[in-house]
Length: 300
Ligand SMILES: Nc1ncnc2c1ncn2[C@@H]1O[C@H](COP(=O)(O)OP(=O)(O)OP(=O)(O)O)[C@@H](O)[C@H]1O
Ligand SMILES: [Mg+2]
Image (cartoon, rainbow, N blue to C red; front, side):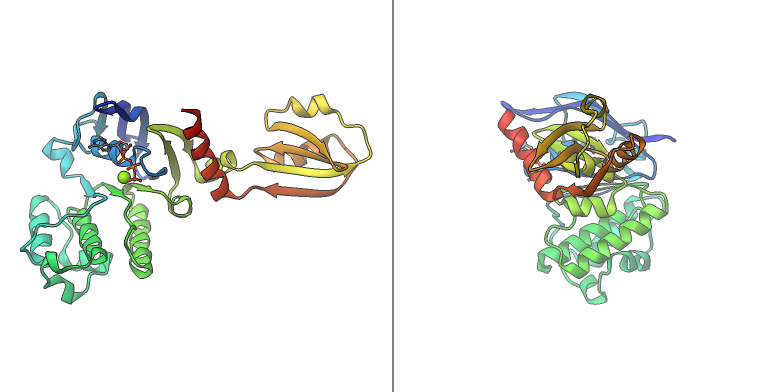
């Protein structure tokens, strides 16, 4: 499948602050990718460089094999930035019309209303009179106006109420089903897990994990299989397995620390070990996520 995004060693240094540090990845058509990371991780800076809105200190970003600054590339992109700023003095309907006019094959006003849940009365209001949440809805409509092939959303749901949020994700799923490529940033692991087919985890300007949500979760959580046995264990044989990271004996239980509890169970059965009271523990994900990002901070 073709890559619609290709970035190589993208780096941004602000004065003496390295905001993004040699970040490389590619995204295929139809992927729904979450860029996940804490405040200051470099999510926005990376997106702005991908969009050609900020010049990288080093490295390159290509969309559809071209530069985001080129018109033919721009026509395939829809964007909602972290701070939605709308032109003052225009009614919502006018600004939507204006955006539609920039694109060769825009969505109709009816489609935009349906996809974003904008109300008829909102369309007549001036942009400066909208609430934060309403502005976001308009920002969402503007991102969709050109019926783009790829959509970028920077922290899209911040400031949205529950119904706006649900509407937003419902539409995103619909767009993904149509084969659109979607990239969004978030602080929320849950959001990334619910929506994305892939998570790219950022911290301190670098990618610290990249993969399917389940694989990322397995990587983040400390999991274990523990049991009681009266047998002598083939310790060496167990610890040599790539999916076993530690084997501890504590309070009469054997605890096998792993990133794949199923594989440990299969191993126990294949060795025909006499075990009882098997327990499987999976660490709390949010906790692991916090620990991981904090740990990285301490190491620097
Ligand atoms: N224009 C700028 N000038 C100086 N430093 C900047 C600038 N923009 C960002 N930074 C710094 O670069 C780092 C990464 O910022 P960035 O906005 O990309 O993070 P983020 O992951 O989007 O965070 P958040 O979740 O808070 O939006 C931060 O330390 C930030 O202070
Ligand atoms: Mg940001």
